Image (cartoon, rainbow, N blue to C red; front, side):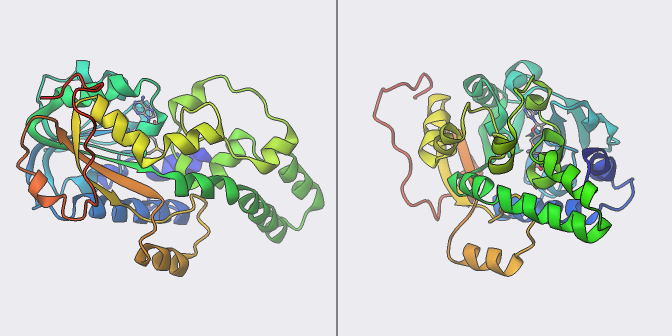
Length: 323
Ligand SMILES: C[S@@+](CC[C@H](N)C(=O)[O-])C[C@H]1O[C@@H](n2cnc3c(N)ncnc32)[C@H](O)[C@@H]1O
């Protein structure tokens, strides 16, 4: 599916004004809905007075978050977010998450939420400090991010996903020239957008000049997902310890890290395997739930029950906000 089609299918989704979503998008949304339920499902309905979503993509998730948030500001770097129609209790804004601290008054939100955004941010310390600034002292912040399992699957399932796409091309068109053309352009940015479900909206990286990759590289390796310079660096950047250190550095205390769903990122549709892996405790994303260090949050009591070992960094080390 081409990105234009995906974007058209997603446009206005937050307000329910537009055409039904195509199947690939429906699958993505079903997974996002499961993730959001895992992240917020323990909280009472409408418990947040004001919430902020960062990196919301096409804004579709706003309709789900509305169950818990009375007034939601739904934002993304990409201006298509404004294609959604605001309603009472829901507004849309273009916002670079790095600058969130400059965009709202201090303590303006009792929930700051993002899903699959933070790994795309260059200056993560600035973004997290901004989140801390706009979060109310008794608020809570929740961020979903891919983990090393996702990274491994992104790399290992990439070539099989291209093979599947080529096979589908043969079945659909029975044309050798068309197949050769398809193989020739495999792994080009537009092609990998179609292959991986996680790029259904453009990210700022897509507007950066990219070095052209050789055919072998495009055949064997996907694009780097976030802002890390190499796949290996990204594997390490997605580790739990790495994110815990970043949250701590920016003045947060982690109350729980929950497993999210299992997803290869390529829409292979192997739902029974996914469910089995989830039942065994695997996940391809983590849900980080954090509060301001040195403050008590009235929402923290809904979390923490399953935290194996709270992150307790050494006293006085690299934490400007330690109370
Ligand atoms: C992988 S998509 C996730 C979209 C959505 N949150 C979801 O879970 O489906 C990443 C989103 O982050 C946005 N993004 C990336 N960098 C950003 C930044 N610095 N500020 C705001 N949004 C950003 C992109 O435009 C894109 O919509």
